[in-house]
Length: 561
Ligand code: C2E
Ligand code: CA
Ligand code: CA
Image 1: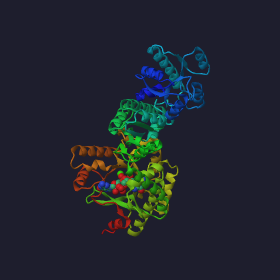
Image 2: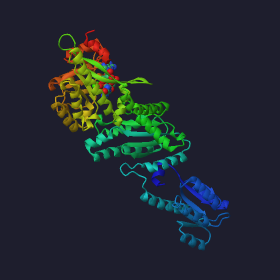
Image 3: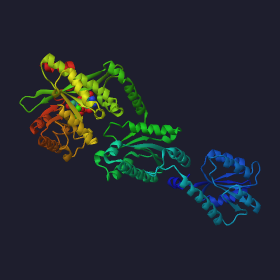
């Protein structure tokens, strides 16, 4: 164990004194006890047992040579045979010159002659040997991650168990820390910058565990762990990391998730401590408001539930358990509101679990890429429905579908969409594509290229969830899109809050300047509708007019019922 670790844990070094004469043991113990944690053994065999029990946690062994049961030589030989303990330095306690020589020749670190010298000399000698061996230890140590200076994962477990030993009275929490969408930071700013982000986090965690009695490790690319004396860590730790990262990262890029397994030290299985903290951390994926989650039974249930959804997906697709609902959009600027289009929104009617909201399974399938299968299904259904309405009601109601950021990574996207529309026999202007604003900000040039291609093929693009993706104003003028879809958070307080109203007005002006159509989502109240109309918003989608409807219900609107 290195000096570094001991200092970090505020631990005393452990020294084993092996001597058959009690008086000798007591003298040394008295000399060393203020500075070291002293363990005693009265012969070689006893000492060997103690060493095996304690693992390699001794910084030094002080060894008498002539003892009953097992003498010092035999003990020493046994010790050196075992790789785990062979690095522990041994100082021999001798009363004879001859023994001194002999012991040095077999490889002990030093000797201390009996009767004992002034305590100061003994202490100095012991201190020097420990220092020497520890320096060597540090030089040969591979336990640190060079980027962050924290432990790497191989050694984290070992040092955590040491922390348990040294502070058995402390309840300790295991905390997993994850940098959200770190790959995006790497992709946009380059790997060197990504490394800098990790180094900053490393520094914060180092300080944090020093102050709060614990240890930290850089586990893999974007995941860190902290094993630390239990307290309410969430806010303090989160803020410490974010405050340091603020200097180099934009607010929009900065999201840190914490998964906390409280009193993890009560679980003897170290692997579980790590797993459970990570489970808690992963449970936050797709949630934008929360930054910390605690491990509990619900999280386990949730993990099983999600596994079940993934397992059931293929079957659900082939058994057509997914139903596409349609939410009408109304054009409001020409006299009476007029049904102008609809958004296709998926529902999963699960045979066991009933109706499952897309808010539950979409983020899950986005994380593992399965969303593309789902979207393909929805696009096909939507295109066929537009064709059916045209045929049966003689009305062209364009439908917009959601295009996930994952879909945009697929090379075949444009040809896939083209053939769906073609097979359904509808016009490309009747099939609108919603792309969330944050997809644009993720990888600007890739998205711009793709969107330009889609537009040149005659598709219209609606920028979805506008206002949540943090496009800057000057970025917005570079982005290709035809419709700006204002996110519902902006609409929510528009009728009560002056500032919210001003903000929306400002966004409407920008849209006007960019010459794009505006849609407001989540309009639930008459007051909201009237304000938006007054501001010049073109289209309204929301419960004020209608919830998303099953196909048959929507058709009633077409029949004018
Ligand atoms: P979104 O694209 O922003 O869709 C709008 C959501 O707002 C829908 O929720 C809709 O039901 C809801 N909404 C509409 N009007 C109101 C209102 O007045 N008040 C309130 N409180 N809510 C309103 P939904 O259907 O639960 O969908 C949630 C999200 O799931 C969608 O957000 C979209 O991101 C995703 N999603 C839904 N269907 C699909 C799909 O087929 N493919 C993909 N990739 N994502 C989908
Ligand atoms: Ca949408
Ligand atoms: Ca939206």
